[in-house]
Image (cartoon, rainbow, N blue to C red):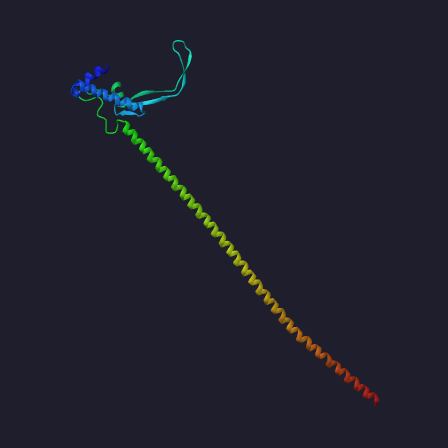
Length: 222
């Protein structure tokens, strides 16, 4: 079946040959333009048309067998849908009074609008990721600042505690030194009167000895 036969086959269904030709041209033009632009045209139950990029490669000339380098290129590809495959394989019967490929649900025909929508969605997703990264970075900076502040506060608290402990130790040492000095003075004060009393007793003994000597001398004279 060629294009003219296709037009004749659908002429009665669309209201005339001219309308059928216009419809076929419009459908094919839309498919070709979408595939050239890199979009994928998918019709549920029928199949999908898409653009495939082939990298540069080496091939052989079938006539001479010579190895030839083939440049990078892009080719169109059609993949039959599962409904189309089932009808061709015979697993499903071809309907007599209904279309073989039923009307595609809304949104199944992919074109430029769908591509634009996809790009817009991709941009939104990228923008959300960027915002999420910025928020994460801000949170990380805030957490780092908080940690640094906590460390600084802890250092200051430790230094203050050390100073307080040192001051308390100095006060305790000074108080102990004062008590020791006072105790030494008290002991020294008690010992000094005792020595004075001993010194006083010594002259008394000397006076008694003198009296005894005087008595002995008097007795000898008599």
